[in-house]
Length: 320
Image 1: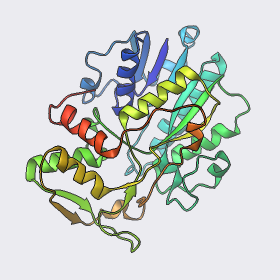
Image 2 (image 1 turned 180 degrees about the horizontal axis):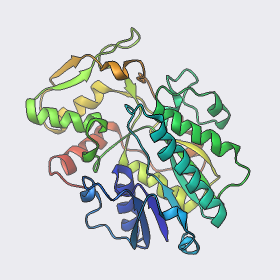
Image 3 (image 1 turned 90 degrees about the vertical axis):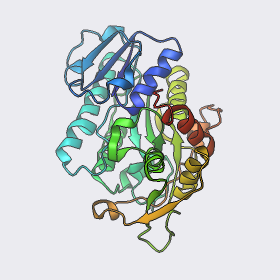
Image 4 (image 1 turned 30 degrees about the vertical axis):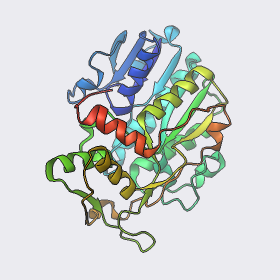
């Protein structure tokens, strides 16, 4: 039996589909099922049973049947300013999952974030000795880094465990995320509605408008890596998960226009005040550690990923 937390969400629902595609149907899905805006994410998915987030790990009833836990669920809103929410959902809940895996000797994958790197002054190397010195720019990043630090302090661990620092993930099933959806998703919506994409101006001298750089990674690559770690069980560690290639927002938006066979029209707008001082102008994952595990599959190029997302999902309003 496999457990997937956050199974209703963007990444969790895609991972659930990946597991189904690989022949896995004996799956417990865990989430907050009181809200229904994400229900379509798991329509036609195959799983054994579902459980509320706040109750599943409080019982040992199913522990002897569990072979692996994918802890994907989290509060991901970088504009949330209530630290108690992050402490509850991202830090303390993750500790509960970890301790459950330790107690019942269950392998674990949990999701961290590139937001832990803050402004990047210490680089984007997933050397765990750097983690205590990282200074995230928002409470979301702090909560993820706090858990990474806690993990590294633990003497008792699951039999195999992997923390994954996700960079900028995009792809189908993110439709419910509203403001927190990817720039690709927002660009597509703006092009269809107005024919013009709005991008944030740069508010620092080092970067021109639209030339802010991020490591964008397609959801299909993310779930492939997670499945590799789950099945191959390399060395337990915290790993970056990006492409290793930073691209500009102009590159990204131009790719969306190209997929729609339209000429680019871009306007630059002021960045909202609430995120202006907490904005990452550059991220690029160092991927040496993941490659050292024997992972050899090539990542989608930005252009190929955007083309797949736009033509096979956004235009048809389809789910993965």
